[in-house]
Amino acid sequence: MATRQQAMLNRLHRVRTLQLNLTMAEEARAQERVTTEQQLSQRIAQLVEAVAPAPAPPTAAAGLMARAHFRSRLHESADAAAARVIAAERRAEQAAEQTREAKRDQTAVEKLLERARAAAIRAEMRALEDMPATGGRRSQNRHDPC
Image (cartoon, rainbow, N blue to C red; front, side, top):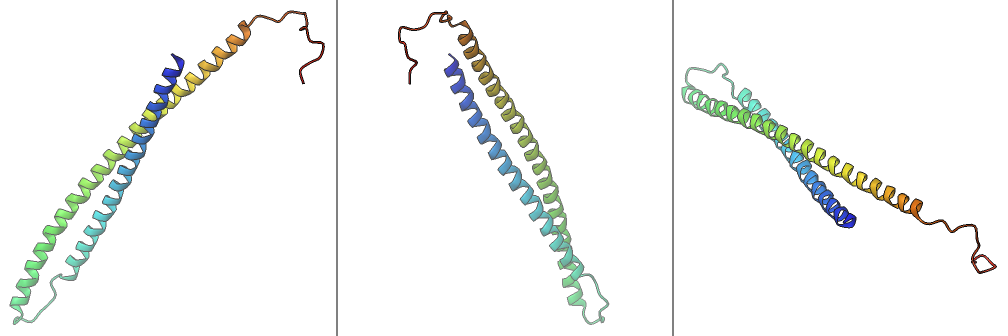
């Protein structure tokens, strides 16, 4: 029974360790995604600043309209990028929470394994204590084993 329980705990520990590693990898990917989205948002903001209206001669109306259209599109992209950053940060927080849960699960299994080891050691000690004493008489051999 003890070996079966020990095997089950070992298997459970391997599974929880695998789950922890997977959630940690997912959290790392989510954090990387946040960083990427923030960098994209910053690049779009730089482009918006680069096409800011500048004083131009009145004959450049077509160019002014093109820049206004481009600026409008960049603002839409900036809004979309900001939404993606928020979504990526939310996903990163969820991944971090999953990692914490997986770590708690793994720690609980490790505590169960430690308790099982301690119980096995106590059982062995009790078995040794319950062994019959050899008594005061010596064995039939006159010499100790070499």
